[in-house]
Image 1 (tube, one colour):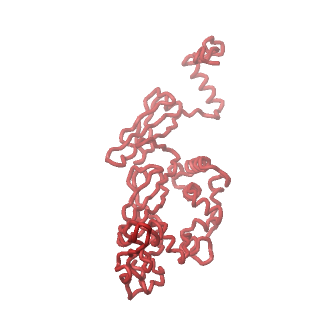
Image 2: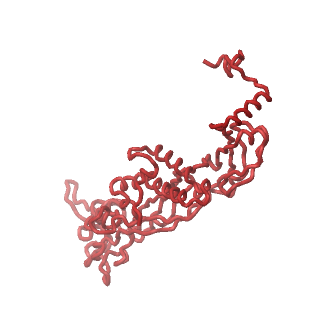
Image 3: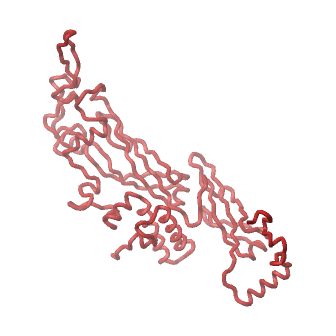
Length: 385
């Protein structure tokens, strides 16, 4: 299998390149090797895919950091699968199982000991988890399905979440009767005061696990990696967050799961730009086409669309294509596509072509001359300084 090319070399940038420089370099490469501009060219298509792969890694701060440290292995889906490698244990999801108690205490509002006013056995919702996806311009505009890799906390597969060794179960604390608190008396100058405090035997849980589960060490929860297919709605934009209910961390004491938040990043397109739900693009035409008019094929999100360019079209003229934009995220309506005409001036001309242009200039009557007083003042008269 051929060795992959360095991602920085693919985009032609240095390792110190900024986000804007990486984005600009990607747009240039994507435009150069886009399949629409190189039909049937397998080499260009391969380079286009390489540019997409490189941009997806270098535009993600976490992936870029792993790539800078470990190279291609750092962004491999199986990264850290072996023992002793970077991110070993859970593919970068490192856990010291001896610290699971403190980990879940941080997740769910402090340790189970101490002075607590809430019921320790009350159901509590699991924490939310985050993921990110990188989409092409077309995928964001039209919607798609993407598989995301999740690192979350789930119920222990051996004990089913109760923390007891398989074949056994937690027992009600004999000291507090399952309440999680016990009464204590204290003599003061004002008499004997009776207070409630967490049960020292069960730590306020109200139950005791005499034989803890070996896998989760009695916590009932265990780190897990899984893949989830997510529906990306049409019209989503760069930087928006998609919320998926009930796909977060496992709840406590029978509480509901948390949610999944998917941050969406959209790769820039070599032709199109987005303005809300409208699409903007430039269309290059020759001087003859602009002067005489022509029927053109304009690229759109739905493929190429026929467009009649009127005779006498001026450079910078903007035309709109109704309902050729992006679908509204919360409805069925679509934006428009705006096409800005760019008249392409040839850089290299043959002697014959130059002569023909001079004849055309004379035929039309040269209106601008170096000896013209108005021209000396400039097109904007007194404003020119």
